[in-house]
Length: 227
Image 1 (cartoon, one colour):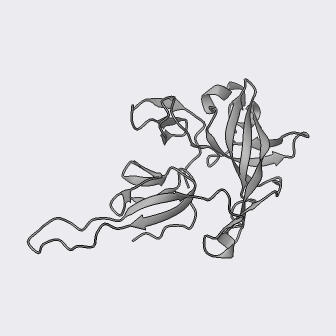
Image 2 (image 1 turned 30 degrees about the horizontal axis):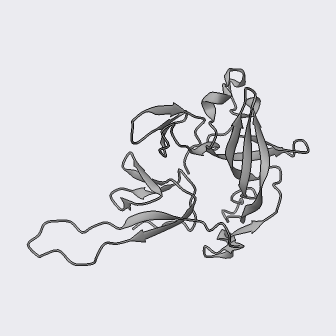
Image 3 (image 1 turned 180 degrees about the vertical axis):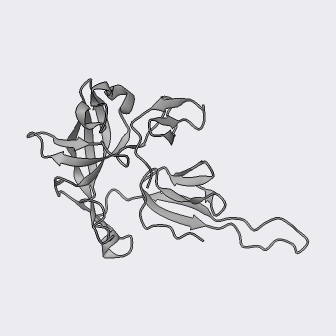
């Protein structure tokens, strides 16, 4: 059976549907199960009552679900120290990976409220660095020219982001006195979680579209490539 990571982010692959059943905080896409929330993945099996010997029904699969991270604890212990997330007022540095929520979309930029700083992500030796949950949200800005790496002049900000989207970005500059400058100009950067105009959590179907699993309608976004 696949080993689940201690912490997952929205859009992260959890495993194939042949191994798990999707539970709360997850969604199914193309025979794979992905996280819909940031948090701690858990599995739970149904009652271990064995089927009758004459029954040809296969054994039930465990259900994988995501437990939200507590918002009040100072430190969330997810196992080894290298996989801890602390609640602190630490400030982002240039090169840090950050997670934030889109608060405003304008013609030339997107305002992002940064809530998690990943301190550069994984080091060169593959060891995860500490991620910090900001006690107070930090303001960031993704300018139009920093949305993607190519055809920057053709970028329409309103087609890449919507208010409420959860975004993964990288700090490229300390910016001005009020906001950090961020970029989403890499495949793994962009929107990692979005709700449709009907309020349903969507899943990515391409690098530029999310799909509403209830209505079947698609919406454009600058989609971050899942891990």
